[in-house]
Length: 158
Image: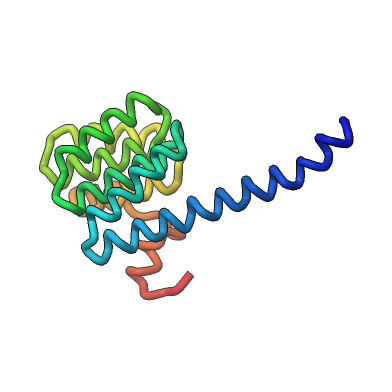
């Protein structure tokens, strides 16, 4: 390794860490804006994050969630369907699409949740699926004992 590349490696790592922190703060700001009813501003923030991080599914998932909260459910569903095409192994995209479909009482929601629960490996996506179907089939699918829902139910803090 040349002296030149050694000198620039810490700068590159520092810049990547700063970018990751900036993206994290932008996402937090977008979520806060949405929670405060500023859906258009939140949507712009997540659109910028999607542009800044092409190929990364999480900003697209957040954008779809913000759109659904802002009354654009049809667009949110379409966004998630496209994300599943682009990232077929992303289980959170499947869970969120299922959640949207369940909210609109679309019959495909059950199929997505069953698919996810059968093959799922992402604990967060599995929890979304469990929580969405919990009321429909409580005897079959219970929250995992270490899940937030379990602690909330028994009023125990993790």
